[in-house]
Image (cartoon, rainbow, N blue to C red):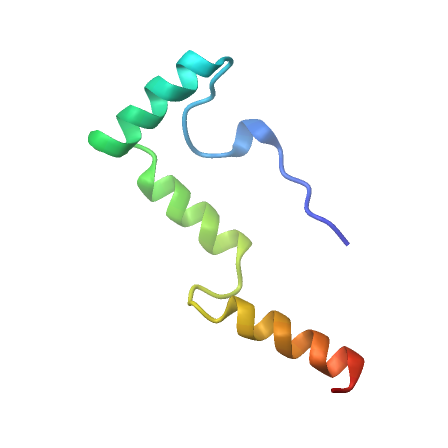
Length: 68
């Protein structure tokens, strides 16, 4: 099992060096994010849950696996 994602399909700017990364990070943090809707759509297609229960689910999975 794994996750295969095409880099070019990820929503957001693509950077090639540290300076571009810093510039794009600043843009996303302090200005309007033009990729926000695309990221939300991508996230919904990838993840089954959108809550704060991930750690609980992982713990329960291992407990059931180990029969604790």
